[in-house]
Image 1: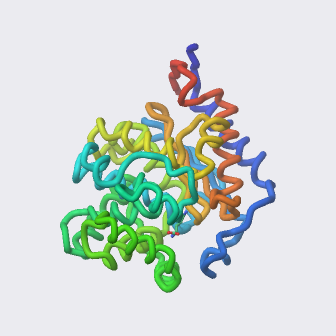
Image 2: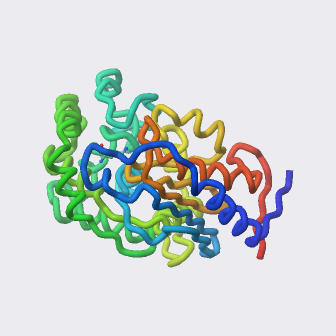
Length: 321
Ligand code: GLN
């Protein structure tokens, strides 16, 4: 089928999704650290960026929240750039775990590789692969510069979040050392874990994440800055990773009901990629049991439904002024 959409229709869908979802109750803020527990649970924003750079933002889209696990997507792109798709498949993998983001069981089950860069284990391994080897400062520069290129503007670590994450990340320490035991950490272990913790503690806005999603949807070229951030051939690789495990053990249900590959973080962010069409991000702190934002999921689903879109629908979609 051929679907023709105007920017005004997309604007209307985003606005209506915001109105319809803003009063949804349910879910609780992540509460493993005070910083996340104390974020205002009523914050809510949606930002959608089209491939010509047009951005439609409604609500709290300039509020800086903890990027948390959405960061895994950005650093997966960095290692895909630095190592290539084949090597990332070999060193980490591209399989869904079907288990929670911090599952140790998943590592024990598949101890020959950490499955995917989009769960904690694979994301810590990904940080260990970031070049230049052995140079914590150089690695961090590459990670944060890559965030900037993807999002079109600078992002900074939220110090208080980074401190609390570092003081309480006992489970991730176990994951890192267990991976080391299986020869799946390719640099210094505490350094790799620290880079992972630091990238999770970056403050990001829904507007920035929407642009990042649109950069992926646009085949690696940032639609706002026009910078080519990564090679076009890597775009389907990162979108495949997102669609297979972006919502952890709930990913199948998510894809089935929403029709859009998306990645969540416990800070309340969701980043969704419609290849060739747009990137969308939503943010609201209260989470469901799997650690995915209740309202952000509802908002993205509502937009997709209103527009009649789905990545597997097989439609030809054009967006005009
Ligand atoms: N910093 C969190 C962790 O590593 C991120 C988890 C998430 O967003 N799902 O446990």
